[in-house]
Image 1 (cartoon, rainbow, N blue to C red):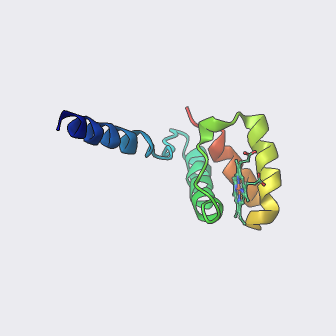
Image 2 (cartoon, helix red, strand yellow):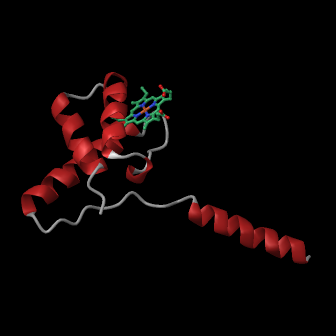
Image 3 (cartoon, rainbow, N blue to C red):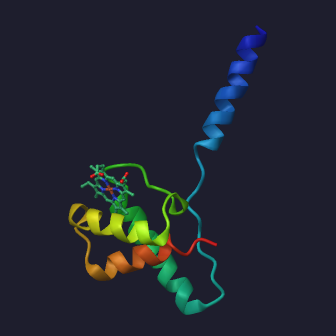
Length: 93
Ligand code: HEC
C-alpha cells in the first residue's frame, strides 16, 4: 500500500518535471520582442513535426547554428526563418 502511494507520487513528479515549457520571450525592446515571438512561432510550427522540441538551453549559440543548418533542409525553411528561429533559441535569459 505504501509503495503504491510512493509510486503515484513518483510518477506525478516525473510527469511534472518532464513537461517544462518553452520560454515565452519578454523583451522590453519592442522590435526585439517581435523578432523573438515570431521566431518562437516558427520554431514550434516547423520543428515539432518529426521530434519533440529541443529546449533552447540544450545547446549554446554556436551549436544551435550548426543544428539549424542541419535541420533546414528537413524543415524546408528559408534562411530568413532560420535566422528568426536562431534568435529565439539563443535569447533565453
Ligand atoms: C523532416 C523531419 C524533421 C524536421 C522537420 C526537423 N527535424 Fe530535427 N531531427 C530530425 C531527425 C530525423 C533527427 C535525428 C537524426 C539526426 O540527427 O539527423 C533530428 C535531430 C534534431 C536535433 C538533435 C541533433 C543531435 O545532434 O542530437 C536537433 C537539435 C534538431 N533536430 C532541431 C531541429 C530544428 C531546430 C528544427 C526546425 C528548424 C528541426 N529539427 C526540424 C528530423 C527533423
